[in-house]
Each structure stands twice: as structure tokens, then as C-alpha cells.
Length: 517
Image (tube, rainbow, N blue to C red; front, side, top):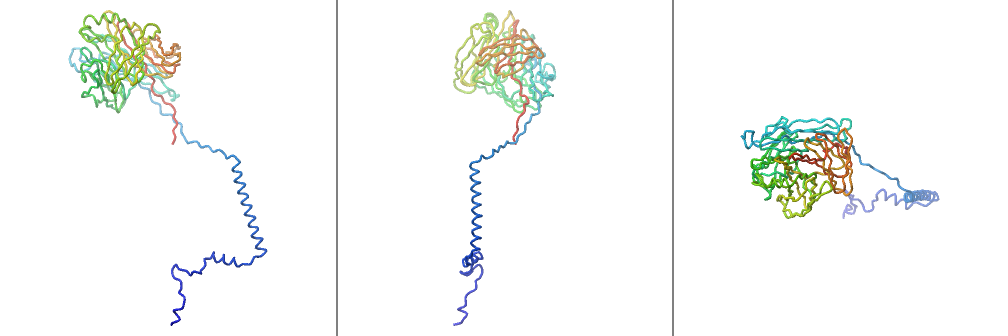
């Protein structure tokens, strides 16, 4: 046997001999064999002492952190206070009364103007600028008969200050079939508004006017409702209203024979100011004219201040004789109600005398959702009233009343008002005997300051849940303050003429806002 077979193999690759030591292990093995000396004991003892001292310091630190209060650290998110660039307050006045056909009776489907309205306005700070709408279906664009767009710039010294702007117009017409007084507030253009008034029965002409004060065109859709429910009609969608323009649409062209129309107006792009203009012809006798402004949005509580009821004996005598008895009688006082949707909507109606005396009325009514109802008011004494409509679902409400003095007749639509909060401003339109009507919906008495711009204030005490009236000067603008919540309207009546409009809340101001990144 060869000696090579007995030789051990050399380790290769990652293999190593079982008895081969790592360097650390070799030092450990060596230390095991070292003899213990006095010097070694001293070194080990010193190291142990140092370790014990470290442990003691750590223990003291932990104990201190347990019993000593920790510092409070507060951090505030970074933010920036920014005041938006203030913009001019802007309102739209509807413009002059319109008629279908010309003076000669030609072009029966085209609207034409009956002259300009008298516009008055005021601002709490700075001047008021006005411009006429550039174009109109009635051919009045760029003239004094066109809708008027009024505006006022922000306060240059204090841009954050809220500038109040108000305006109103009135027009008395006596041209052929059109005789009467019409007045309207200058309102804010909206993307969604409701019109509750008018009729398209024989002798009743109702026009829808859409004014776009913005710099871009508006696309408008109309949704029509009547005593029979929703009405589908061609041409009610995709109506283009050009920038600084007015469209005039005959309601009878969409739905003839309507006794009780309600129209919802929605717009995309530019916003529009929507109104109705109604005229009545009973046989051969003119029955009056009116501008129907947009109502407050659908609400479970609708407030209609300043409903003026004239001598009802004269109205009833008129409605029972002559041409008035030969056609549909719309000279009596009626409440128009509409609730979007289906199902029966229980409604409670309260008629509150604004004088604090005299008889009012209160009753309940089951309203069919989706259908417009006209509910007559009987045996109301002459005077002014606030009508409160409470329902289980949001509703739209308005009142129509007539005035008869001798051979002069007129009518007006009283739409529901929007709530005013803390302050507002209004302008009294020119006309006979203008009166401010205010209703206090709260549970506490309110002392309202009525201040002509640049003059001394007059205070009016309005009891809780009641109304008050105050004569005002036509053509003047007034500030309202000193209240938490209020509903207000301005009426004008006399000599067989009747008109009324609500006071709208002020436009949005430019208040500082905090922006967080």
C-alpha cells in the first residue's frame, strides 16, 4: 500500500478543518489559559465600577423623566390671509314694458317696446354706473327701453368693506290694449330661478324675458308646469342668450291656454335675470300690466309681505258686469302654489294683517305635487297683508290681486321674498304712494332703522311674528339695519294702479379668507 493513501487532504474552496478556529474564538481560547493575577483583578474591578456608574446615571435619567414635566410643544399650520380682488356689485333692471305686434297690429309674433321705464338707483359707497343691454329680441337693444345693467365699484380705500347697491324701475303705460302701472326691483342674475305668475288664456299675454349681463353667452332651459302638471314643449331647451343681451319668449308659444303657469329657469355659462311681463285684455277693455319678478327658491316656509288688497266690493262689482263676466274671472285675490315632485303636500296658509287690526284668514290645503293650484281668498278687507305659507315640502308661492277705481283697472303679482339678514338696501320706485312693508319672522321684537342715503334714520318697531308699514319717498334709496331676520317689499297703489316688488338681499362682498397650503 502506498504511503500517499494515508496523507490528510488539504481543505479546498469554502471548506475548513473542524478544529480550525476563527480569530475571535482563538483569542477566547487563549484567554481561558491565562493565569489570574492581582493586576488583572484590579483592571476587571475598575471596569465593573465604571459600568455600575453608567447604569446608575441611566436609572437617574429615567427617574427624572418620569417625575419632571415634559415641555409643551405647539405647532401652528402655516396659513395666509388673502383678501380676494373685489369686484363691482351688479344688478339688472328688466327694462321697458313689451308688447306682441307693432302699433299697427303687424308682426303679431314679434315683441316691441312701449317706451322706457324710469330707473332709480343708489349705492352705499361710490357712484352707480349704468349701461343698456346691447341687443334684444324686442329691438330695444342699446336704447333707453332696453334692460339696464347697473353696477358700483368696490370701495377703493377699504376693499373689504361691503358696498350695498340697489335699484328699482317703474313705468305707467296707456297705449291701446296696454294700460296700467308696472314696477320691479333690479335683481341679481342667477343660474336657477322660478317664475310664478301669468296666464296664456284668451286675452292674457305673458312674455318671459331673459337678460344676460355677463360677458359670455348663456344657455337656458325652461321647465313648464301648469294646473295639469309638467308640460313638455319643443323649444324650451338650449335657448341661447347672448352676452349683454335679452331674449323675449311668448309663453303661449310653448303652452297656450294655461290658467296657472309656473316656470323654472336654469342657465349654464352666463347667468340670467328672468322675469315675466303679463298684460290682460278683457273683451275690448284693458285689464292692466305687470312685471312678475322671480320668487324665492322653493322652501318649506314662504313669506309674501306687502300684499295690497283694494276695495273688494268694487272688484266684485266689476267682475260681475260687462266684459269681465264674459271671460275667465282673474280679478279676485288668489294664492298660487306649486310643489315640485309627486304626492300630496299638506299646506297651512296664514294671512296676517299688517296694520295689526282687522280680520285675517288661516286655512289648510292639500296640494297635489307637480300641479299648480290657484286658491281664492274670500272676504278679505281692504288693506295690506303678509301671507305665510308653511308646508311639509318646499313650495313656490305667489299672490295676485287687482285694483278697480271707476273705469281704471290694474293688477299685480306678489311673489315670495328672500330673507334679509342684519342689513340690506332698497330703492323706492317712482309711483303713487310708495310704501315699505316689513315682516319680522323671529320670536322677539325688532327695531328696524330705515335710513335714506345721506340722511337721518327713521326707526320702525316690528313685533315678533308681525308686520309694519312705512311710507317712503319715490326715487330714494334706503338702508335697512338693526335686525336679525326680516322680509321686505315695496308697493305702489292709487287711482286704479297697483304694483309691488320684493327687497332682495345684497350681493356677496369681498371678505378676507384664510388659505392653508
